Image (cartoon, rainbow, N blue to C red; front, side, top):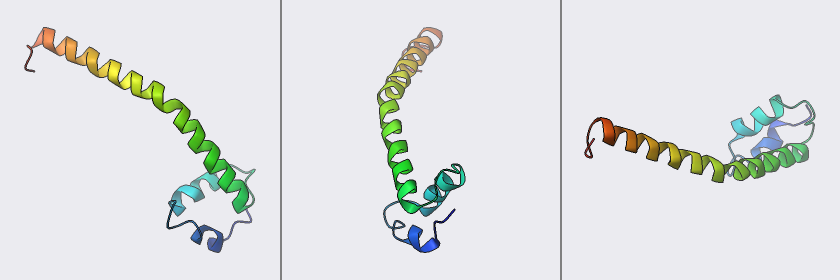
Length: 77
């Protein structure tokens, strides 16, 4: 990996350096800070794509738990 600590210092005020380094450690195709930025942005876009479905699943699960507990315990569980 050709990414120096100085490269990471450029981003430490906006992005966790530890998080950036973890991307670099887990992907051998990353050899420059530009590659790392592209990978980070792609990961962010992918995460954003999953957010609506995860939010829907969370609400559905929470409501199902509420209905079940109301039946088992009472409305004030």
